[in-house]
Amino acid sequence: QIQLVQSGAEVKKPGASVKVSCKASGYTFTSYGISWVRQAPGQGLEWMGWINGYNGHTDYAPKLQGRLTMTTDTSTTTAYMELRSLRSDDTAVYYCARWSDCSSTTCYDYWGQGTLVTVSS
Amino acid sequence: DIQMTQSPSSLSASVGDGITITCRASQSITRYLNWYQQKPGKVPKLLIYATSSLQSGVPSRFSGSGSGTDFTLTISSLQPEDFATYYCQQSYSTPLTFGGGTKVEIK
Image (tube, one colour):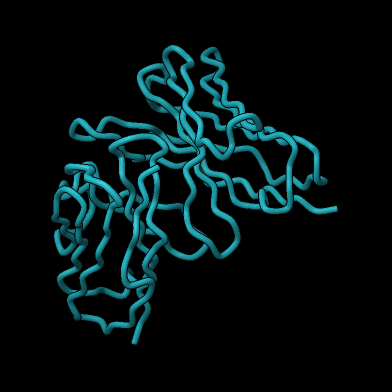
């Protein structure tokens, strides 16, 4: 079965970096992209960007450009999201989701379980 | 960026009621609109993609319609498991923005 399994919760100080992993299984990793979506406590969903699982092409949300890097390791079918210069408002649950082609549009049909990143001094 | 506005932000309804949630885009997104359901402490779940296509396994009481800038999600007869927050998302252009969410609560 298709699964996205994320790394565990992190606590970071302001100014630090965090790297979250998303291990994919049950499908051909290079045939799909991976997106990252975050959700601050009690808030809605925020799209962070996506990475093409085949060629590594990335597309980031403008507000995170410069602080965000998405990568993949096709040998281990794992996607990574690194966010730098962390601030308190980066505290959120971070989700990876499979970027799928749904009737010629994009949709997220499988999601990771989420990783809580807490930024606090 | 395309802004997505949902209304209402919350609603109260009873089991068996029919409800409609609206999502408006700041510019035309043709039919590139998805809906997700999220229960407290859980992962978002894809309900509907491309405006009206039901994701596999989603009950037929859920339906979607619209085009251009105005879209709706309808639940024909609310069931206890449907009480959750619903998000629309445009997939027309990046950044793929979400609506602010509609929380459906039990009356």
